[in-house]
Image (cartoon, rainbow, N blue to C red; front, top):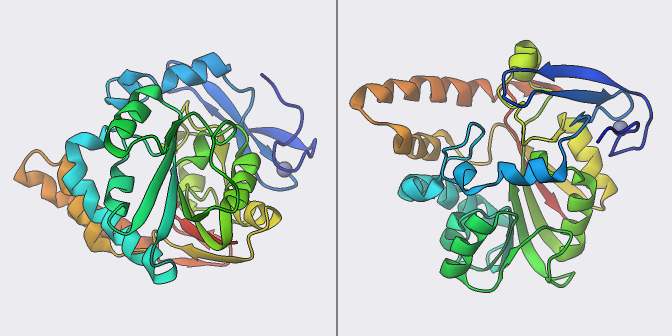
Length: 290
Ligand SMILES: [Zn+2]
């Protein structure tokens, strides 16, 4: 499907930006000259997009795949715990909704402090999460869930927004779902990052399942337009280096791989280099309060 206007601001001043040919399914992304939003255009059919979230995707066997967190849960737990610690500086307890909860790992960690609920598009992953967490896991999307509005104190959308064709609706719906004073946590790549600019078409974030790409200011404007009043941006993430190093061990198969810690640490500290719209890397996490 080809769009003639920007899905965020409806501007008709959109122009080809990148052509990504390294996948079996090549695609192009376009950029809106008015709001800076970058999006896949034309977009794959809904059928094709659905096929991306097959069992093979979640088990890490497809060409375009998610790494199956279940195999490395005890390593990922370091990052989940670190994130919960920061969230709890603002919201001590209450109910949490994880949008794109996959197998529910984060929610299981969160359930020590919060009443967990989740939304998961993939039936394969969602059914597993339901087994662990019960009926408050909705298999579907933000368009067809059963949760009441003005309800949650925390909503997390970690590396989800880039997968959505209509991120403006998603952010507005999260705002409606939150109670007053509630917190939305969003993690997605910052396309203003020097990393994205230097790598151009080769930037690894251009993937067939990524439909929406945000420069930081575009994401902040989207959140403000949805009604979020107080917004805080963290570079690269809201916690320190240690949990990342601990998580990375889940991917290591031999002692030599620990040299990767140098690269991870270098990246982490390079990410601290930012001012105004300039950011050295593309990592960011945004906390937005209703
Ligand atoms: Zn626009």
